[in-house]
Length: 119
Image 1: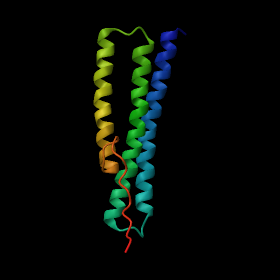
Image 2: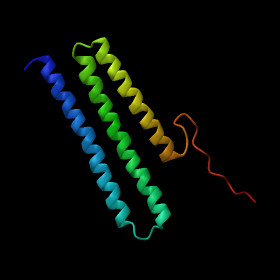
Image 3: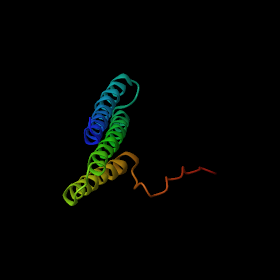
Image 4: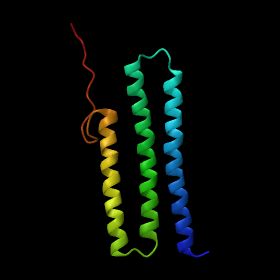
């Protein structure tokens, strides 16, 4: 087995992990949403979206890592690096959009402080 074959195999394995993370995370988020009977509908939906979004974010990180492994480790060309750059930009945009949806703020913004009610 050559180095290129090994890197391709590792890239495919990391791709598979990324897809598995998304699928398993979606299944767990769905199960937890169904099992939380005492939570109101609106809150259950927001919690479900947050859990599902986190699973997708983590899966996207694995998928980007797999693309980087396969593109950079095996004789990168300008074309393959350009395609990788476009893929990473799209996935980064998706990740940032999901982060805003989940947390309600941009990743570089400070977390909102809890308002203290001093009388």
